[in-house]
Length: 321
Image: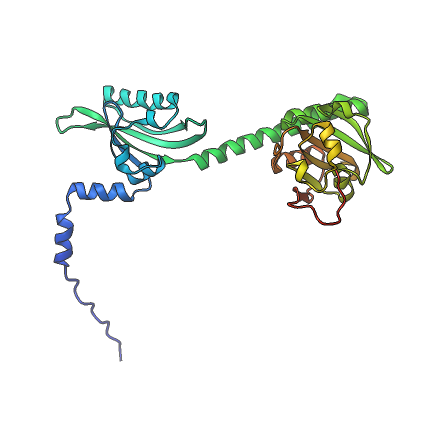
């Protein structure tokens, strides 16, 4: 027996709901929009003072919407940044033409920077007279930072290839090659100094150096008495952000050298460890994993384990530089 499809009941209009919607004024809809939109919406007079703003705009400036009324960008941004916005809005008032989809840098009084994508339009009276401007801004800081990081990484990789090419093409003796590597490595990473440290039986010897490490060329230390030795023996890169808090550091020597943070990576030749490449700084926290990765690429080392600074000194452990 064939099944009969049940007819759904006709949808009856909800007149009460329709009446409530019809009762909403344009002002009600605007208020709801300004309260709920995640974008920074704002209306300004001819002098670029806020007339009305969205909740997101107020939150961006760290205040309530009513507190923004009558204020301008000059009350929040650095003067030069506020002036650029004022000039752009003045041009719209005078020309009556919109400026759409602009990427703008916002500079704050403390020097910090944010980015937004902004569209500004003329605010007109029914007569057509331009009374001010209105617009919206969307925060794109995260995207811009990612783009800048990608550009910096690309530039650094290109520089690494150039350094490796220059070293290979130089036709220099070993000492000159090591000195060139130190100079270019320091330049690339912005370090205070760099050094090539070579294994010699049970010691490590600074074979070449630049910057604040230059006075220590020829310095010889037991392989088990430094962070360089730790990295060499463990075949593991090391990042130290503060020599005073790292149990692998022998404090007296680094203080004598003026070193407060450093990066060390094993140095390979024909797949054999021959020493380490290191960069140092007189400032704490000068390096990140970005510099560590750079050194690994420069040292021609294959991907390896990397150790950041331990959080505490293990009991019974020996101190190393």
